[in-house]
Image (cartoon, rainbow, N blue to C red; front, side, top):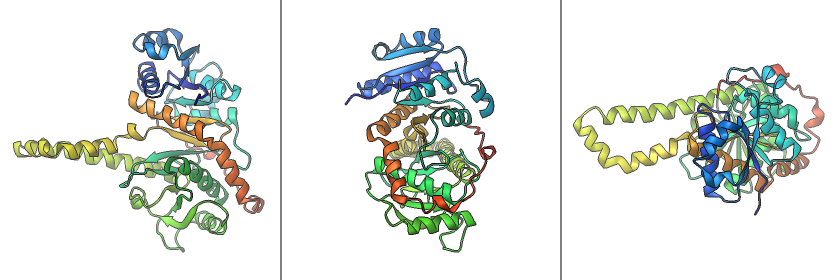
Amino acid sequence: MSLPRIAVDAMGGDEGVRVMVEGAALARRRHEKFSFLLMGDRAQIERALESHPGLAGAAEIRHCESVVEGEDKPSQALRRAKGTSMGEAVAAVKRGEAGAAVSAGNTGALMAISKVALRTLPGIDRPALAALLPTLEEQDVIMLDLGANTECDARNLVQFAIMGAAYSRIVTGRPRPRVRLLNIGTEDIKGTGEVQEAAKHLRAAKTLAIDFDGFVEADKINRGDVDVVVTDGFSGNIALKAIEGSARFVTDLLKTAFRSSLRSKIGFLVSRPATELLRHHLDPNNHNGAVFLGLNGVVVKSHGSATANGVANAVAVAARLLEEDLTARIGEDLAELGDSLMANGHRTPSDSSKIESSAK
């Protein structure tokens, strides 16, 4: 199957052009159907492509004069989006020159540029940032929102649940993904008014293809019992960073323990297959590629510190969402929900509530 080109912000990320081009080349070696628009400084991209002749024939370079910096606020990035590698990658999706955009740049800026350029799907008030997180089971869990909206009402949370479930059906193949709202307890009486109201609407939406059974606590996110965890961007961003920090803590603790004595070093050699499996499972590059759900187009955010393998995985996420037509699936589920929730006049948080994410 032939895929639309994928626009890559070649200047984003901690190491910029080298890793982004290497990641695109790796994705191309894994799947020859991929082709790319590489946005950024032409001279730098051409130098990077010298090491990847297999990519050169499948990529078009679009020269961009400027770059969205990591410290730029979303409002600043919006004003100067035209001509930047990030802004032009998203614009290529809007113009139909690319099917999806991938960037490892400033998260808040990418969200702002994408929302203004692509707009949201009918029936969606706000896009949400969703990512795959590892679990004890074979399937990852999808969690959203991870930082796009600090405050959410019940209507926003219900929309996030619908979008997350549509994404989960693509990833897991489950016809009815297990959806839960993040809460401080699983009892029906726990949580804020917004969470309680969202739960009420999701329980009442019998026609939706989801398995909703209330709440999940933060310590159960990675157990593998849930397919989609829904929350506001403030809580989701904190939970995500706590999970990432805990994973780094465990791996660093193991490294320290295995280096502490000769006996520990011998023990490491004996247990190396198990520790390598653990390292692979916790490596964020193997789960790289957060998605801005709810837009009229596919935009994927790669982690700023991603390796070439991580960038290649982000490209693969973008391609899979194009193949499975995620936006159409979300639209179908919104139609199933009907107008009952939309007619209740819930408050929608103002644009000032967005997190200006520190992720690069």
